[in-house]
Every structure is written in structure tokens, then in C-alpha cells.
Amino acid sequence: MLAAAVLVPTAQAAPNGSSSSLARTSDNKIQTTASVEQYWTAERMATAIPAQAPATVKAATPHQPSGRAGSIEGVAPSVKVQNQQAQGIGTMLNESQTVGKVFFTNPQNGLNYVCSGATVSSGKRKLVQTAGHCVHGGAGGTWMSNWAFVPRYRNGARPFGTWSAYTLTTRTAWINSSSLDEDMGIVVMNTLGGNSIANVVGGNGLRWNWGYSVFVTILGYPAGPPFTGELQYFCQGTTWAGEGQQLRAWCNMTGGSSGGPWLQDYNDQNGLGYINSVVSHRHSDPNQMDGPYFDNDIKSLYDFAESLSP
Image 1 (cartoon, helix red, strand yellow):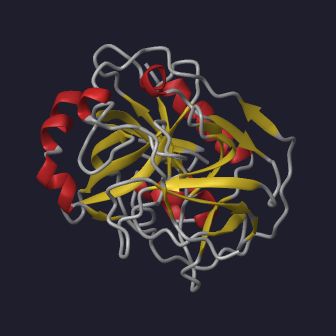
Image 2 (cartoon, rainbow, N blue to C red):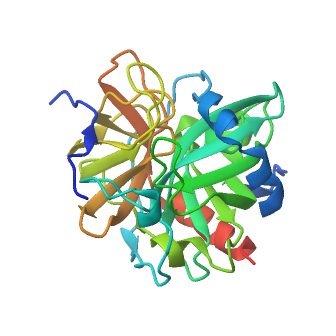
């Protein structure tokens, strides 16, 4: 079920080796572009804290991936941005303009948080993929507010601007029970300057039902120590089955990387790949992280979000 609402070496994280019980999705339409841009001052961005997935009962779902493997192709940017070099932000190796830092407020406690996310290709060019807990608090929680996405954020610079959310979406299973198997979210973004986000930075492809063993590049903005959340980091390696219907990978990124894409066939020349999972949580080993296995559920959520896109 779904719910809406100059080249320099890149930094690398060190690897080791409103919802209805009947609906599959739900959504939450939120602020206008102007209100979100005004809210996210440099000071608020700097003091936002890393979001973490809530503790849940261990998933009991067996590893039984089913369904035919599917894929959506990525799309290159079609609008040239004039201000990025003026800000002195050259591209680092393995740093993608499709990946950005996510900022939001949790209305339940009034605190500001950070996550990560990435654009995903669609007909309307307005979608950003992230984790479910970056859009909704899960069981007993609520929809996040002041939701913003800053592509290729680095040290306070916003070379492609600050994009506000039109609608947040996630799986109903995440809202009702904080199921880590369903810790996935897709956000429909407002336009900025008359442009849709994937036309400005490009959009990654999407893959589902590709199995548990795939080679991925994981990108995100870890903000918990020893990281600062001020630039993108990456991990690379082959995944394996985690708990329930989850993927696991060697990666020591910390809080703030939640929602960062796990990209198959990542091309560091154009910053595009195929999103095959997102950073969700970790267990006891600080060098490993888990993400939801992308099966037909992610395609259902994708279709739902695209149907809501104006």
C-alpha cells in the first residue's frame, strides 16, 4: 500500500570489504515554493540534525523476491543553469547533481532534520526519491513539513537552488507500522523558475526486481560524526540480503545519509544511474547499512506519485 504526502577527488565513506487502510498509497500536499525558501535560512540548514529511522520490530518477511525485473531509463538535463560556476562549485569525482540534501521539520517536536535524496526520471520530470522516514514519521508519526531538496549542496552553497515539495508520498505500510521493508518515499517537487527539477539536473533511472546481489554506488550526505553533512560521500560494492526484504551493503555513512540512492550502473561523467534502493538504517555493525528491496512496491509508489504530479 502507498501513501503520499574543477575536478577534485570526491569524499568517500570507508567501506569494509493522509492515509487510508484501503489505499496502497497516501499523500500530503504541503507548502508553496516561497514559504519553504524563506524558511530555510543558512542558519536553519546548518543546525538541522540527522534523521534516523525509528526502531521497529525485526522484519519477518522471507527473502522471496518475485515479479519480472523492470527498469525506467534516466534523463539528462535539458535546461542550462547559469549560476553554478558563479558560485565556484566545480564537480567532484562521483558527486552527482541529481543527488541532494533534504531538509524538513517534524511537526511533532518542531525540530529541523536532514536526509538525502535523488531525482528520478518521469514523464513530468518532478520526482525525488528518498526514504519513507524522511517524509513521514511512521507508526504514531505524521507528515513532515517545510520539505526542501537542494541538489548538489556543498558547504552551504546551493548551485541549483532550493526546491520545495508539492506532495509527499510513501507506502501505507510505512505509515501504519514503520515497516523497514517499505521505508521508501517519493516527493513531487514544485517547479522553480518555471522549470521542473529533472530538466535542470537530470533524473536517474529506476529498477525493481533485480535481485539481492547487485553492484551499487551509494551517495548521500552523512551528518553524524565523523561526518559533517556538508558534502556528498560515496560507497561502492556488491549488496546481499539483509533482514526481511532488505538489501545490505558495506558502508559507514551515518545519519543524514538516509534516503540517499543506491545506484546501479552509475556514470560519474553525467551523474546518472538506476536507483535500486535507498539508505534506510543500520543494525549493530557501523560499517554496514540496509535499504528496502525494490520490488513491485516501488513501481506502485512511483506510479502513484507521478499521477499526483501537476
